[in-house]
Length: 115
Image 1 (cartoon, helix red, strand yellow):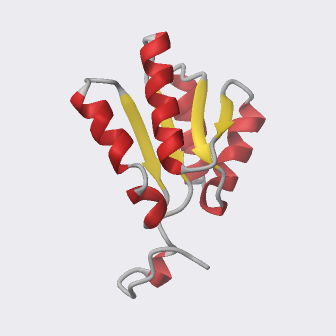
Image 2 (cartoon, helix red, strand yellow; image 1 turned 90 degrees about the horizontal axis):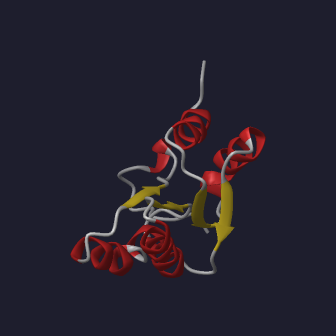
């Protein structure tokens, strides 16, 4: 059975995305590994999700390509992207944002992020 991380990494490669921006987090580690195995995409890490969002926006403006953000932390990590994503939408900057989710065992239990 093919896993989601491989599907994401192959899709990123297949559409020609050369750079993704992220805050390294446990939820996307298997995806980072697959991206590394494929070797067609560079991973740039930021220290905060909002910074990663603005880096992707700047990349999109500078290159004319889609800016891609992988948010490895669900809950607060995803909400930290809101300002940069809203800015990109207001300025018609093309962004693709993927956010992780907590394990399905913890859904509907008010757990937004692992400690």
